[in-house]
Amino acid sequence: MVLARNRKYLKCFLATLTVGTAILGGKYALADAADSMVNPTDKVLVGYWHNWATTGKDGYKGGTSTTFDLSKTQDGYNVINVSFMKTPQGQTLPTFKPYNKTDAEFRAEVSKLNAEGKSVLIALGGADAHIELTKAQETDLVNEIIRLVDTYGFDGLDIDLEQAAIEAADNQTVIPAALRRVKDYYRQQNKNFMITMAPEFPYLTKTGKYAPYITGLDTYYDYINPQYYNQGGDGFWDTGLNMWVSQSNDEKKEDFLYGLTTRLVTGTDNFIKIPASKFVIGLPANDDAAATGYVKDPKAVENALKRLKADGNEIKGLMTWSVNWDDGTSATGVKYNNSFVNTYAPMLFNGSTTPVEDNEKPTTPTISVTNISSSSATIQAKATDNVGVVNYEIKIGATLYNSADGQLVLNNLSANTDYHVEVVAIDAAGNRSITAETEFKTTEQPTSSYPAWDADQIYLGGERVSYNGKNYEAKWWTRGNEPDKSDAYGPWKEV
Image 1 (cartoon, rainbow, N blue to C red):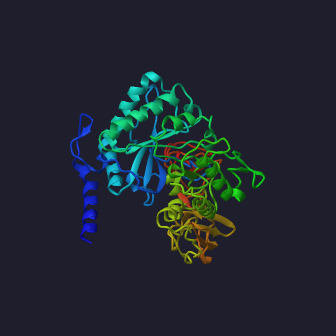
Image 2 (image 1 turned 30 degrees about the vertical axis):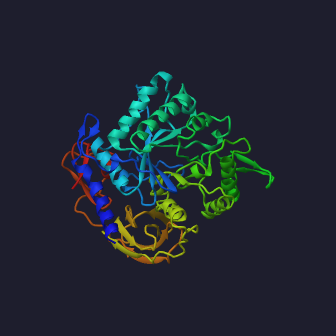
Image 3 (image 1 turned 135 degrees about the vertical axis):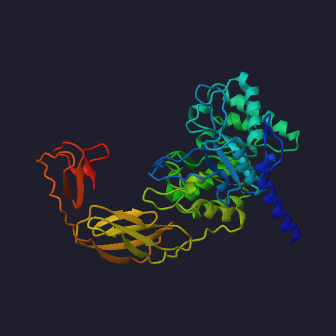
């Protein structure tokens, strides 16, 4: 008991040490949790973190990912890959810079996670990265990676090259050579600099584009997390099923996960061999995170993992793109509610291979209507759920609205009119509450002492009119300009 309490206090102490840390010539004068290299001891649940702020609907299905600080990554992920180390425009060497924090502030983010026993890697590349390294840049790349580790406290590097960057210039020889040197450098300090990769699975044949990285880093890489997504028709021929099993075949998803992984961990059917103990399956967090590949039924993953284990091919874990998408929101405003980590962390770490099913409906919403006028009103609905966040469907008459927070502001209503409201709360599992109903009535159209606006009449500055229940004053000569369409620079102002 005393030991456990002391460990808890030690973690808190290490996590807060970064407050007094100062950068001196690229080194940190005061040791913190980020100064060590944290490595997972067994299974891994890997998640990529966005080093940019979400702007607009950025999902494949029109949803929106969530922006949050690195240290706020959901519990359950024990390896977080910071995305990405890229080559800035006009330069030739890839590097990294936090998008919204100073170097010391970002190191403190890494330190907090390290103090919790979580590894933080820097991911090299990304889908749109233009990385082209020559043999002459090998030492420069080594020095830059070491500088980033010293500055931010990264525990390793994940190769995430895609498209043309995989084979560009001398990447296939320079990057493995540089990483071998970096790993050897930290081995001399009794630290393990982790090396991982996230290749798209079609490149993992024996002569595929990623073969030079796998072979060039043999005995050096810690694990490989292939992307089982964005490759809709790609797959393999299964002689037992006598069919082509593709990545986009939802009905055969279990067979795809099991069959492709078996071929890769055994090096059969022309696939390159990656030991099961160093193999991590990569899946999208949801439909918005990738074009294809989302596993709709977690049972497919559960059963595939069971079959692999029964074969003696138990793998190291799972990876997802991305933690920001796991916490994202669908196009209709429904929160994804961290369903990936909530489903697969217990499956990997707690010995439970059965995801918890959510069959409980949200509570019946309460509804309040406020700010009622002749033309507007505000609806506020509230429900609770055993899992957490719910989405709301609000129906006004025959018109259906979606609201993530239960609030809806209605404008352009008819005066002195009865409106019927129906609200249903929906949780992340799709459970729908009992429908709640209420009614409200708008007020009468207010009368005005000013004459009604006439489109054909000329108005001079200072003259007043009434229009759609409001009063307006002309700022200068005007005719034909609707008062409620006038902005700050228009001829009318509301009085």
